[in-house]
Image (tube, rainbow, N blue to C red; front, side, top):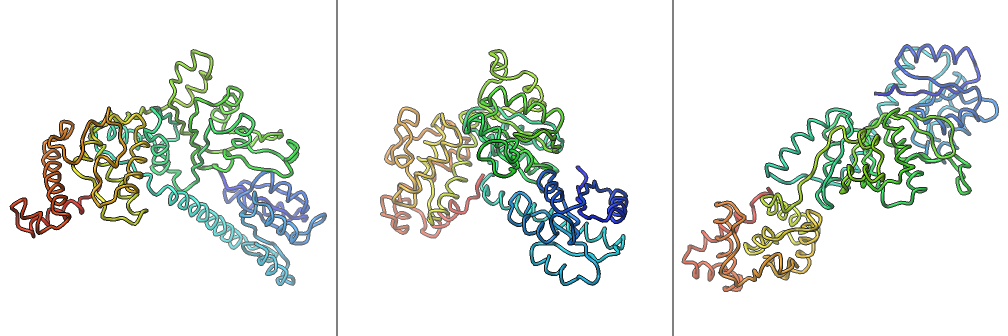
Length: 459
């Protein structure tokens, strides 16, 4: 991984030289500034991992540097260690009130200096990990569900590929779960504690997308009143997911190619190269080989992205996963709607399995969300799924024949058993004792069957 970058801001050249020697020996990369104004400029331009800051500086005092850093979102989280003389410790304490991580008194003791720097960097790393975990919480439902041979094979291969830094290209129809796989690849990789940044290549104009990717320097255009980091820079050490890469404008493709080749870029309006250590995962529902032939996508970029590729199957080709996915989405939406007892009837399960799912997993998710809202009872019947009769067939609650042909033997038996129980409960208006009489079963046995269905875990 990239060496931690430490900026030394001090006007005493002897101290600067001593610190450089110690930090270089400790495995750090160093930058230096001899006054506060230059130090602030380097903080904004270089984004160091840590700053060693003297409080008494020409042009701009160290305390003022701290205050300006606190006002700038681009550098407010960079840890700062203040250096001060023994007689000015109260000033150092005041600096900590303005955001400094710690202070060191001069003359600096070598071992203590390295320990404080290490702890500051560890704290910063933990903060970044917490930010990554918050992102994971926002995507807490990003779980790959499925036991079909096709999906298991892709998962196993993707887990192996995730351990490397190779670029990965995800192909497949819209709604097949490409972003979900990208997030999983990031979590399976050694970069999991670092940020994963998502960039939608079709949602923005070319100019806005360029700014999103690379950021801009102050004064790059009329409204650029301050430096802004791009998402590539923010993802340093982590993963960048380029969604809908097939729609990226050609001029930006050339700039992205340089990042893939050289691991560096320039901000909009800048002349200085910025180095980054990032792993790329890209996704598209387009045929990129055909786009290359048509002159719509750069061939060299295609080969750079297509080091490892996976084509996610449409839902209609993994019908054995439909019920498991449906139960997964049902459980989530029922929890959000505070309806934990909601379940799918046997007829509804059969309808879901029989449907062709042109919108793939995304459509299935929406169907279950709507069904939880519209179904008046705890058992969701086919009519509340909103599936087209042309694809789903006529499977109303009273139909005696159900299309179990796409289910396994045991699934078919379970579905038919559930169908019979549902019909008896409906006939008995929900009264389990009467339903048991209709079925010629003991009421306790029927209650156990119903409890087993509700307790069945997601597939």
